[in-house]
View (cartoon, rainbow, N blue to C red):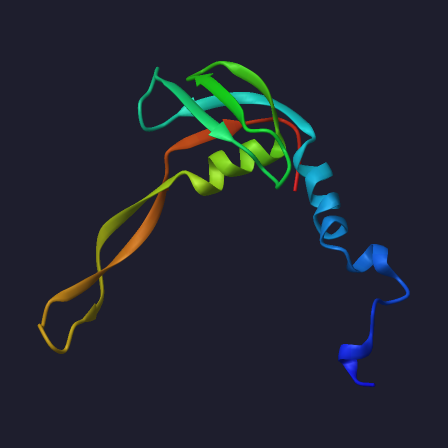
Length: 121
């Protein structure tokens, strides 16, 4: 029989989808201590809901600008990488041949920072 006839492989633990993300879940749950900085609204408060992986409960976080917190690495990565605003610059990268209008370069501007003295991946 062909591949359709195969029921499972000998090493099912490595092939299951739960096993694939378990190592990342463990890394993301490690706590990191640092200072939260709100660049968008200095002195302001940020409240958001976060669930890093399937099966985890949704948690609500409330962070004040300038305060120190102990947060999971997954939450910190979300604050740094997922919360950015696109900003256009004055640098022309291309002129549209149909409309003869310039297309400007764009860069991502971070809304929040999390300053820590610890090293993490």
